[in-house]
Every structure is written in C-alpha cells, then in structure tokens.
Length: 546
Image (cartoon, rainbow, N blue to C red; front, side, top):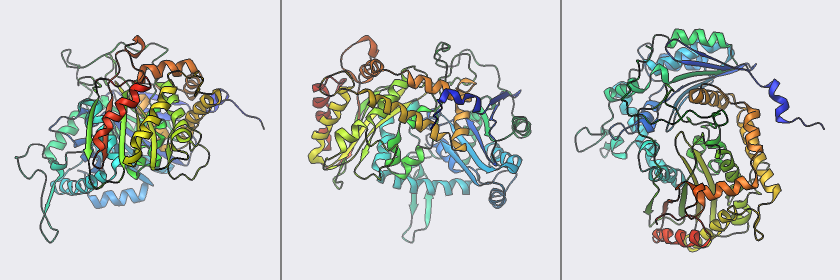
C-alpha cells in the first residue's frame, strides 16, 4: 500500500478566497465540491465583552436566535427553516458568537436571509425574553448537577480573576430566577429583590447587540459554494450596515507588536482538538467540544482590536463542599500560553501525551488508551472515575489543567500519581520514567489525526475558516500546521513543561507559577489544597503562593 505525506496533498486542498466589503465585513469561502453546504456568520462578541450589568447577554442572544424578526413571525421562521435548512444553530463562547447553517446547495440565498434576519432584525419581544429566561433557569439547574462541566466554568473564572476571559458564559442564577405558585404557574421572572440591577430586558439586549454586532467584527464564511455568489448575497443582506467610524486614539485597548512572519499563523484550531476529555464527560461538555476555533490576538493595527483590558491570569482557589456527594471532583490549572505563542504546539503535544482516561471506555483507535494518564493513573486502579488533561489557548492568555474524579479515600494517592506523571515531563530523558520516542510520535500523530478528522465535517471546516479569517485575515494551511507539530522535539517538551509547570524562578517560565484549584465533593474536600501542595512540591512542580 502506498502512503502519501500530508505535504503531498496540498494541491488537493480547497482554495480559500477572501473578499472585504466596503463596510469591512469579510467574506471567505473554501472551494469544496459538495451537495451540502455550510454557512457560518461569526461575530467578535461573547462573554469576555460583557460587564457585571450585562453578564449573560451573549448567552441570552444565542437562545433568542431564530425567533421572530421584523420580517418574519415565529411561525414563518419555523416554516422557512423546515423548507430550506437541515441544521440551524447559534453557538456562543467567550470571544465569538457563531450563527451556523447546514443545507442543500440550492438553498444558499434563503438561508443567508434567515441568518441575517435573526442577527440584524430580531424583535426580542418581552414574551420571547421571558420564555428564554425560563429555559435558562432550567438549564442552569441541570448544569449545576453536571459537576465537571460546572467546574470547567469555575476553573476559568478563578484562573482569570473573573475579568475578560474569566467572565462566565452563563448568566447569574438570580437574573434568570423564576417564581412559581403551588400550581406551577409562573408568577415572575428575573431578580425578585434589589430593583432591576442585572435584569435581562429586551431593551438591554438590543443595546448590547447594537454595540458589538458591528460590520468590522463580522466574517461570513462558507464551504461548498461559489465565492462570488456568497459575496453578492452578503452585500444584499449585510451591505446596509455602516462602515466603522475612525478609531478613538484614546480608546482603552491593549496592543501587542504585530507577529513576525514565523509566528503570525493562527493556532485557532488547537483549543478543542487538545481537549478530548470533553467527549468522555457530560453532554454539555461534548457540545462545547464542537467549538473548533478560538479568536486569536488582535494587534494595534487590526480593526478587530478589542476596547477592553487585557486578560490577566491570577490563579486562585475555590472549594465547594457538598455533603451528599460520593466522589471528589478536582481541577488543577496552570497558566498556559496564548494562541499565537509558538509554544502552543508543544503544549498541545504534551496534552495529547498525557491524554485522559475513564472507568468505562469502549476502546478503539484514537481513544488514547496508551496515553500516560490512562496507563499510569487509570489502568488497573480502583476508586477512580476519570482523569483528564486540558489545554485552552485564547487570544491573549492560556490555561493548562488536569482533572481528577475519585472517592475521597484515594484522593491523595491519585494526586501523587498525577504529580509523578507531570514531573516526568520536566526531564523526558530521566531513567526512571522516560518519555519514549514512540510515545512522542504517537502523541503528535493523535493530534494531527484529530485535526484532520475534525475538518471532515463541513460545519467544523466553516467555523475554523471564519475564526482564522476573523483572527488574521487569512487561513493557515494544513501542511503548515502539520509541519509545526512534526517539529516538536523531546527538548521542546522539557522546555515548555518547565515554562508551564516547573517550580523555581527560571527565566524560561517568565514569572508563571500560580496554581488554580477548584474542587467539589463531600466533607473534607477542602483538604485537597494541602494534598496538592505536598504532592506538587515533592516532584518539583510549581505551587505558587498556596
């Protein structure tokens, strides 16, 4: 059998075409022959752009997508969606909101009209807002029961000090509170006391949408369609939006020097390719795993530069004691690297090398059954439900974490196991537990396979295209991505492991060192902080100021 290298497939890869409209909206397409097309309209708006008063507004706007508009009633919208679309959705994250459609090739024009209508002309009636608050209230109750998914939100909140990337994706429970009578009838929604502070209303949602849904913050991306056709239709649907005004030179933006030619390529595909543990957790986490890209760093010349303070990693501790729980759930985070840092590739390989493990797995290729966490922590053990690793590079900050779910009796034992696994990467050539060349090769192959497999889905392909173009105005080729992964060496693993996890004041670590510890479990779970400090210190891992 003849095997072709990735580099030999470059001529077969779809061509990316990009056009910027007069009002600064960007249109990008991949020329893929297909009977099914995918369309994504991405806007640089998400929870990081919210304030204490507008917390949860991005979440609510996503829930209110595809409701009534000034051009369609709810019934008309439902009928049009059934007629033209096989899949229609809206996903929000910390930095972007994506309106997405998957449809037959003959339906591009009506589908783009549906998407633009819900983005630009939603009615956001009080009845629809109240209905969405009821749904949000129910979802938050379910979310609290899914401990690992909930702690993922808490982890990022604590790691980034509750600001910028630390702002939660979810609204405050009190802002979506629902008061009912004994018969189950709704009496009121929203804050019960304290006036209208934090209240979610139609007027506030409209103001938030108008502030951030600006043409210079929008990319329209499509796969499987003619570029010129999408440009023409985008001009029809979005061309009336005014061009952005000149930027205020006194605006409080953070800037960085433009990236060099060697580092300007986007790493936007990495975040969830290197978080496969989501597939072994709750459905809510699996839903998050579909997010294929994250907005990378804007620079001072970039019209997408955000008018908000830069994210600062702070670290911290938050423990939630629940007497009724049987297992202890623990997440331990380090300051990672941002999406434009060249070390993001080596850290992604480290995450794949560590991998994950669960007490139940159906096995099969690509399940990570030979990863270090599975073979060194999970396999043959008792009292443990799962162990995972996580790498999340964002536009101006990053987070690397490990998580563990087990019974309280064996928590200290497995924290020491985790410390042993992590410390082995500080010196991959150590004699006791070295990283073998085949392990490094397997980790890189798993990362490349995950990337290539994800791009088989037109929806993921379209989302990645939109994110990279929104980020850098261009798309990074598969060959270049694969090349950067292939260049990762054992020495890179050691250097980046020291930078992210190692103790001491070495220059390579650039002042990193604070830990983020969040946990939920039965009585005694608060002891996890002392357990982590002892286990980490004994193995030369950073413990910060805990």
